[in-house]
Length: 185
Ligand SMILES: [Zn+2]
Ligand SMILES: [Zn+2]
Image (cartoon, rainbow, N blue to C red; front, top):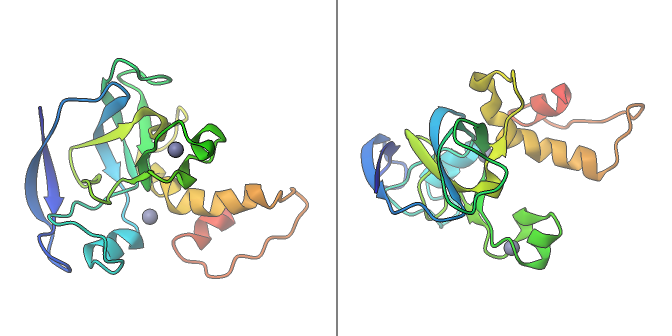
């Protein structure tokens, strides 16, 4: 058992307060990550305020997690302790449905949100399936990497899916949290 020190809200719109919880034994395909930094996204606020009717309290926000792998299960691939990884909106999926096998894990029927029905990254530790703990490139500024895991991928994905070429002109509507990263990309 691992005791996690986190910040949680007790009610919709509540203040974040220190909160401890226990993680059960690590699953064979899971990793525990020591959180170094965590971004804040508007979806954290929407979840905190239960705007989508799916928040469970106490609620620990945080789905732009950057940290170091400190424990790995026996079946974990692609990661070892000491690796720096990021975890975004999702933290697990089944790994055997058509979507998971086709590389569209985020469309899995059983995909697990990092802050949906479980606790997120405003904490000293966060747990993830290994495939959702994304290895970070060496030399990346860990303090700034967090938003790439949510807002960043949200704007990067359509650029790839639309087959945008280097010669293309791309319009970005709304230069906010996502839009400014689209501009950078
Ligand atoms: Zn987000
Ligand atoms: Zn799946």
